[in-house]
Image 1 (tube, rainbow, N blue to C red):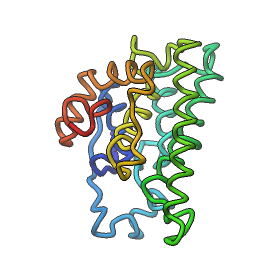
Image 2 (image 1 turned 45 degrees about the vertical axis):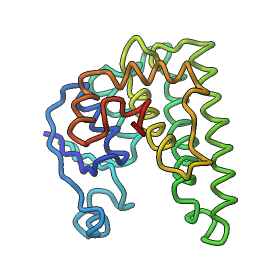
Image 3 (image 1 turned 90 degrees about the vertical axis):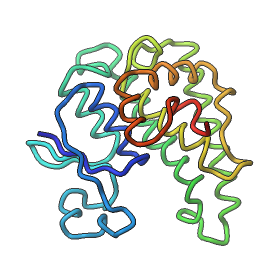
Length: 220
């Protein structure tokens, strides 16, 4: 049995949507984020960096969003290309781009004091905003020009859920001048609309109070 250490509308929601889509039996261990649970010795045995998500498996615990998603793809043969698929290399490149570049820049928009200090939050947020726009532009061009089947409106994939949750945050959490307008990325918007309409995503969204359009209309 899999156990997902989870807080609603955090990165663990990405993993939860993938688990639901794959119909993998799992339990949720709700993390008392505000109560300091991430700093406890017990939790650090599961995730030594003290963040969520963390996934306990029969082979031991895992952490890092991209690592867990890739493990799920490889374990099930679904939601992304397998190791012998010709598209595997491109998929891996964009999965880690999403993790290392888009996710990181997104966090800098929400928590600009972390990389820059309290005195430099405005400049850090502005720089992160520009990075996010550029990186979303690369994803938009990928979808428009290459039509990857692992990031499309035709079938679900882990990247669709991953980017969808990031877009949810980017269109609602930063201060108004820095919020992302998804309308500027119509190809990506169509992919995310298809992903958020999946029964699995709808179940998670309903349970976590994310609305019926958790990716594309996070403010409604």
